[in-house]
Length: 567
Ligand SMILES: Nc1ncnc2c1ncn2[C@@H]1O[C@H](COP(=O)(O)OP(=O)(O)OP(=O)(O)O)[C@@H](O)[C@H]1O
Ligand SMILES: O=P(O)(O)OC[C@H]1O[C@H](OP(=O)(O)OP(=O)(O)O)[C@H](O)[C@@H]1O
Ligand SMILES: O=C(O)c1cccnc1
Ligand SMILES: [Mg+2]
Image (cartoon, rainbow, N blue to C red):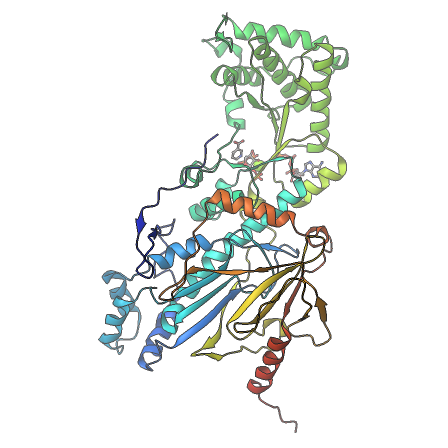
């Protein structure tokens, strides 16, 4: 297994503080440049500039409106990449020439000089910690700065957060169904949406609670543990044991050599036929499979794991595997296990386990009953849940397509909405109440109850006094007048911290390592009440606003909504 290798960060002085802060590397994907945005961000930037408004101080919130996968929670991810992006934000001469070509020929030259000079030194970013459990409408990030610059950040930020949060949530959901003690392997690279979809999915599935990936690039880039078995092609590429020329195997402790490991395996295969419980269950096993298993064991005696479903799991794969595993056992090695990749995974895993136990008992091979069983093949939350209900003996799941493509919901609808400009709160109205934005520069807090669970998130205006432990506070649904509750929090957690202070005199939060984010994520999920987490009809988590913010939203709403006229 590979170990995490945190990147060596050099130190620079960020200009705002005297203490040196770690240098921030550029985005992981070199495709993430200032041009990775929608054309309208540049056209608006020009129009802002032309109107002399480009330096108006704007505040935008990044949030989503509905939890994915029919659930009631989401895991926030992608923050580090956003910070890497703005820390290195600068348009090159070539990029500016390209923007010039894209915009109208009437655009004035001075605008392009302005574009050449912009960076994010005057932008402030506040965010919830990456890996946190988050809920609809509560800002994941607040971005403040010159309106033209912040507008250019909209598309890349939303792009970097959307898939990252979606796939992290998907991974967390798979982990929740599989249970804490199962080993979860991400096998999705071949089916992912292109290279970035694959590498991103591997990183964020690890963040969301997977244990390892088969993706070597992700292993190298992020230090994620790499794991894998072998494919059907390896099994069917052999014809029979005659093919094996190098047959010797040294014992694990180096004290002995078995000159013919093939014969040793065949001897065990014969013995297995005589086991009381296997009588009549298998006769001649598949010889190409046997040769493949022996060859794999000779190559990796310490790591022998066999894919047993190429021909027939119970009549061939399992006996062949057991024969090789018993031969390895003679030489002091412990076989790792099998992988099932088709058929009824509940039934086959139970049958395989029974056979392993029989061997342990009848042949007195200590520990053989506990040999690992990995299952794969189009797994998803539903199949994991079905397997749990039926009862199974799988220790480890390899999950690809459904996990990394987020097959059951392909997008999270994160949005980026203006909430204040030049200290003037702004609101976006909609016929659909769930789409009305919550105005003002806000702070948000998570309030915890007596039992240690999170009770409610509450947003308030920036200058309101924050909720206090032990002090009763009214929490109101932002849009529904009748929904409100008093809460006496036992613990109050402020959600957003400063990750990019711009020119503000504030300390910047350090970016945690992937391992730290993963741990934070696991802890957060453990602290959630189970009724919010369950798959069927989960209870919605409450998201609220302070009484003052409630009044203000509705004041602004009435102010901005034109009064209709009936005729
Ligand atoms: N006990 C089970 N309960 C519910 N779903 C299962 C169970 N066992 C397997 N599955 C799922 O059923 C589906 C079986 O798919 P499918 O019929 O295409 O595969 P198969 O015929 O077993 O194998 P192959 O890959 O060789 O076609 C997979 O999604 C698998 O995860
Ligand atoms: O099923 P997924 O969740 O995507 O997991 C990854 C799959 O990729 C591999 O085979 P592949 O699917 O390429 O071949 P197969 O369909 O013949 O098994 C592996 O054997 C799994 O079945
Ligand atoms: O290592 C494996 O078993 C593996 C890797 C990728 C896809 N399917 C299986
Ligand atoms: Mg498959």
